[in-house]
Image 1 (tube, rainbow, N blue to C red):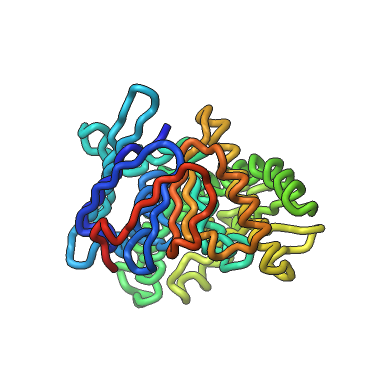
Image 2: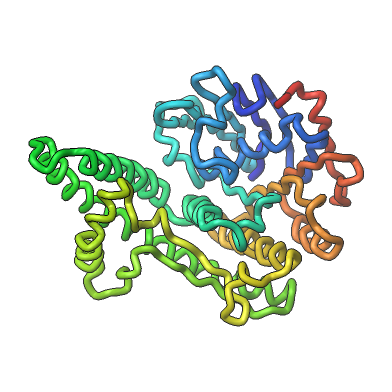
Length: 370
């Protein structure tokens, strides 16, 4: 399976772009600011439903435009399928397959297996918890059927519940609207708990699956003993009656949630710890160790996707070679060799890695600009 053509309309810096691709290595080369990362980001969005660079759709849409469009021809043997995603500045994102009926974006997520290595990957280990949640969400959307739908539903419910909490904070104790808000809060809290526990359990399953390949890869790359530890906000998930336990927790939190106008617990506050000898790597790991751990996490996802689809996913190497030392450049080069399709971005010709018979595309000739 490989991308044979990518077309963008009003995506990020690109007004219009049509790029023919093929198996093997394609290197997008050009100075920073020409939009080469935006090209591979579009592939990431089509594959996972989101981008590691932003938590909303608005930045993906060219300024002044109502929507952006990503179209990709995916060729597998003699069969080519066209996937299309419409990313809206406001409103729900939609998708089509072969020009068919309009679908929810989540209905095509996972169809195109992709693993992206980026300069921001160190944040998966040492950055804010939001970076680790993004990693978990993108991996789970590709590896766990139904996860994308559960995530979308939970996000909607969380917004509705937070809005009711803010309404309660601003209402008078004897306001009739307060009773309606309280009744609504009870209903939305029930949905919030059900969907939140569903996401929590799915994330735990994902981490359980990542554990073995991740530990094995780090042992091979660095000779260190590591493990992953999920840190769910719903700590009651392991209890005999998690729904009841979480509901009781919310009753204790009620006053604080109303005072702050926000959901104080839930999957949006989960975290993931990478432990070296049972100590969190984010607290002491060197820059080189952080890179190795991040590379191993991406490689572990690659391994799981390969097993799931029966063939390796498309690999994106976005400006990583300028960030890595010689030893880790060699590690990722060794990994990338022989992959069916690899998309690489580099700023300078001196950064072009020795990846065999690669096709080099001059991004300046494609007409994009930031």
